[in-house]
Length: 204
Image (tube, rainbow, N blue to C red):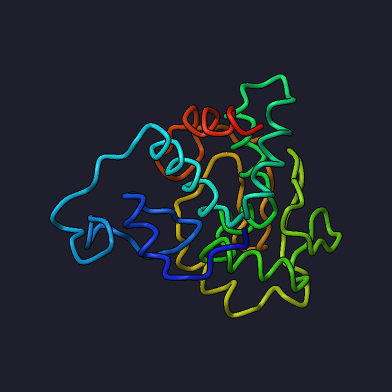
């Protein structure tokens, strides 16, 4: 399954939650499901449906296809940490997410495009792989020739999210230092990660 490129707010309304990685827009103005009868009722979801929605929140926020998310879930299950906590750590450590969380881009899709086009470095080495996994102590920054890109400057002036402790941003020098590894508490949207683990427990 490919990445979603359709109406973003429609997905937010279907999930009933804002996903800052997917869009800067909010579903709060229309907090009901899409469709002609969306305001009339919200159909009661089955146990499977509830788990599917939680999994889809993760997939759409981080912009992954199903194959990528399954691969990360397999990696998380093989670690010594709780599978759900490890999964979210791996997702938050993706370079495209770090570029977004540091404030260099308004959304994760925008951050992914910047990374793909070679505008960012990790420890002064160009990295153009959005899935690159950063580690504590790494320094992420735009390349010298990309420092003054208008899209980066605009995003830094008006970040989508407030700062997070695990990323230290030096706005003057436009560098982001990874102070520590992220935890489940740093995920910027409401999520029941255990339901995601249960969803994949019958598939993997």
